[in-house]
Amino acid sequence: MSRPDAILDIRDLTAGYNAVPVIRGISLCVGKGEAVALLGANGAGKSTLLRAVSGLLRATEGAVLLSGETITNLAPEKLVRKGLSHVAEGRRIFRRLSVADNLELGLARMGLSSAETARRFEEQYALFPILHEKRKDPAGALSGGQQQMLAIAQALIRRPTVLMLDEPSTGLAPILIEEVFDKMAQIRAQGVSILLVEQVVERALEFVDHAYLIQGGRLIADGPATELKDSSAIRKAYMGDVSIA
Ligand SMILES: Nc1ncnc2c1ncn2[C@@H]1O[C@H](COP(=O)(O)OP(=O)(O)OP(=O)(O)O)[C@@H](O)[C@H]1O
Ligand SMILES: [Mg+2]
Image 1 (cartoon, rainbow, N blue to C red):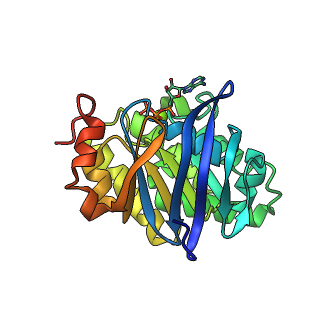
Image 2 (cartoon, helix red, strand yellow):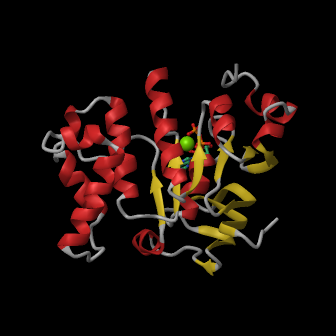
């Protein structure tokens, strides 16, 4: 399953809560500049997998490699410095802080010079002009879509090699979902590898190169997005749950 060109290489990972495994023996690869989707119904274990990869949750078995280096169970701050950024479920921004201060938090403890910090801000403001416009406003005053952009920018300002996004389109109107996908395409065009958890399955499969499907914490299918689109596994995994129309 591992590939020589993998940037993120997850091998037989098992993790859970209170010693009860939720995900079991999951292997998944993301290549350089590749976008990969992690799909599955509610409660399948998608967020648990991302948490175990980003050090928020202890993996009890298996390994995670980033650019060939074993990073299993390293502390989240260490992983961030190594180039792995995770935009968690929900919009984890500080509502009372300004947009600019939220971005600054993304750079906490990175020890960058002020010139480099300014450069990083400029990059994010170029990608998300609305954040520049609203840089002095409290983050809580932003719309849902803008808050999601801020959460993504906060992760991106660290210049990750791999960006993991957990349901970035949740709760957004269709036009804003499109905007999120448009930004993700730009991010990927800059060479960042993306691991995307997404409920809007059809749209996700249009965007990614490869997709993995999990059910009950286990990998049940994976393949090129174009092939998975028509697979019965997808329909089965989501039966009675999420509409994929
Ligand atoms: N903090 C926790 N403590 C105990 N069990 C948890 C915890 N978080 C999640 N679980 C359980 O782990 C399983 C997988 O949850 P997870 O959040 O990973 O699913 P998911 O695929 O991300 O679902 P969703 O699409 O709803 O976000 C579920 O059965 C859930 O109840
Ligand atoms: Mg989840």
